[in-house]
Image (cartoon, rainbow, N blue to C red; front, side, top):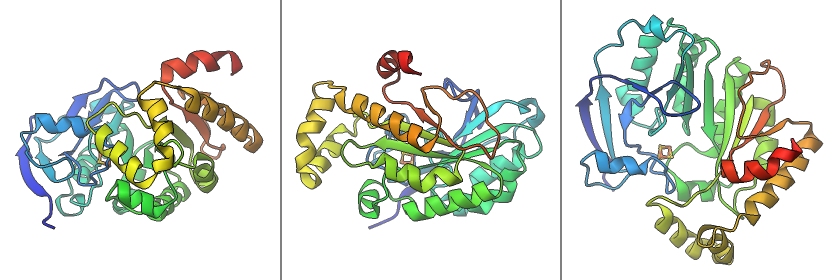
Length: 295
Ligand code: SF4
């Protein structure tokens, strides 16, 4: 198999105003992502790139004019990696994520980084130099064989190991349990593995609205035929029962562990040493209505 098609491209600016609730600005040092996750929510980006290769088979490496007056980002939230993994394997060679962190070093910006990689370890000291930096790793299984069917990123063991190292280094870490595959993702087992080495646990359900619906359903039919009726109930008939039951189950599981469980919101920063807060982002609006009387 040949490697991904790599292009180097010049862009006007690396900083983009964000429409995301979690941050004011986003930075994506690459276009595309060679982790090639089967369920990638960013794969819609392909149509803006002019690439004919499949998602996961190309990568545009961005070069930009230096950030002017980086200190204007003091106390502003910047999310790195909303539609790419900033620590995809090519980062080792091109170092564009490291370059942007170097440009922002000392600015006082509040950075959050999302990844599925262990390469982020290379930049630990640099990331630590930012106030209140946060790094999240996506973990939606402890089964390496399911993981390797889904993506070409670091093993789950490596993600958890690097999360632990960051946490021990005093950097805020998030375990992003996403996407939760009905009948496959063992949320409780992941929480038990991660809870002592992270500050936040985010839960997000699999949604199948994008172009990845077909490959995911084909995969379920092939590898988990017993789950096909459940997936059809959820994704063809809009049945929310699975998520509601999981929400209930997790609520009592967290209560048993003494972990705070909130729905769709975690605006408050807790002390670093406090136990992690678990934030449920299942179909926000619909579940939230039902959950609101119980918080
Ligand atoms: S790591 Fe993230 S951006 Fe990259 S393919 Fe996977 S889901 Fe998409």
